[in-house]
Length: 287
Image 1 (cartoon, rainbow, N blue to C red):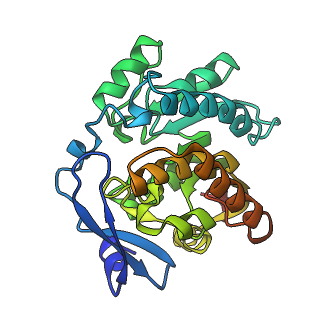
Image 2: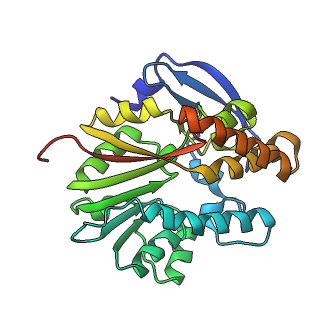
């Protein structure tokens, strides 16, 4: 499987706007085989599309009410995420890919984890360094290591070389290790309600848009399997708030709360939450 295959035979799905940086329009195309969406075209200079003070994971700002909500939810989610890790681990060895400003790794470090992090954004790495968290720019320096836990919190949708990354994740994960992938779910109610204004499309920074089927199918191609799926119930509210701003130009907290609540209520039956966390393991007995 290659990136070309993921873009082959796709059909138009939505035209979405970059509301964060450029105001450019991008096509979100549907790949029927993998049941996933792909952003087209992919800019050659993706880095410049992250150059915004409003891009949350690369800054520690709490100046606005929206940033304050993000910070509160983020801290709450750290505890919930860590509860998913097995308590029987002999060595609490964790790799966080797309570590941002290092807050999650700092939380894990304080709980006794041996931490390693990767973050391509230079500004974010500098902010992490101020907290005593040293991050690698890419996976090259840790390619020969093995980790019991690997996390990617809303990162896989940003990775240009998706097929290569899946292979790298397989090699980095220990034989009995756990890989946790959190991604938006375009089959959720809030995605369907907001359509091209849905903030989690976030073109062109989000290159891929996943369904549950696509995550299962993609990881099967590298002999890995999804063993459990967890809901991210807070995301429906936060994404709806951003989506309301995309749609109307202003933040409607009451409307966003209502749509987020409806999305979670519908997902309690369909299991199609706004964002999902996938726990993934090796399918082979030996690596």
